Length: 319
Image (cartoon, rainbow, N blue to C red):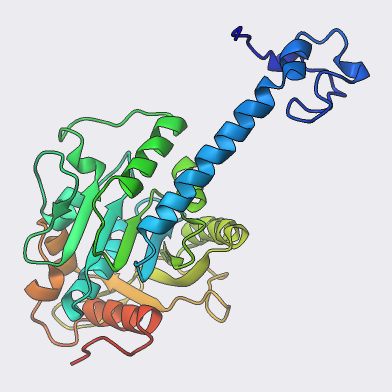
């Protein structure tokens, strides 16, 4: 077959559509440089092949994750609000308080932090098992050298996400936590498209109290609404600072007048700054094992949030 290039910039305004049944046959097609390739049906065949391939991928992903109870996408409107920290805490809490097998997939391709958060290093593997925990972790951290940057455009990123979903050994995982990039990116659109047949998929949104973060979260919530994926709840991180000596609570970030309080998106969880959590995540330690303090505000808040939102107060050991 002759290899002909479609010239998009020369398409007439009244074009019937390159993939329509009348492509190349209508009056506006006369004189168009694309008339022959449209008339030949090549583009329609390519569309059918592409649709078949996409459907095959979606069915394969649905089949692969059919035994997963929940796929939890952790999102944020802004970077730096503690999204990866919250994702790690959710995964650690399920692992610590239940016997369920947990998966953790980091698709923040340009800013992965999994190696640091979980204390996992080493060569690329189909899956990395975090020692002492029933958590299976996968990230681009394992594909790159420490100082390497992933400088890819959208199509290559999308292909990698598909590989991480389909070709990583997620067998036995019951709860999959997905750490996504901040904002609404190609990665989000690809991920939502690939998981749209997995009806157990839901979203946890992470924000900080100030308007600069909330304004972007509102946009992302609208994006989630359009995808028909359930919003499990909003987590407000850095909501306050509790002095480790006197326990006085200070609101160090200015709360927005247009906060989610009193709305359907009112945060289900408020997490204060905590230096012990920061120390644990910086050193790959499990805060649920390292922090011995009773009634720790972050540990208690995450435990209650995950127990009520994911397990409907039925499975967690709350003692």
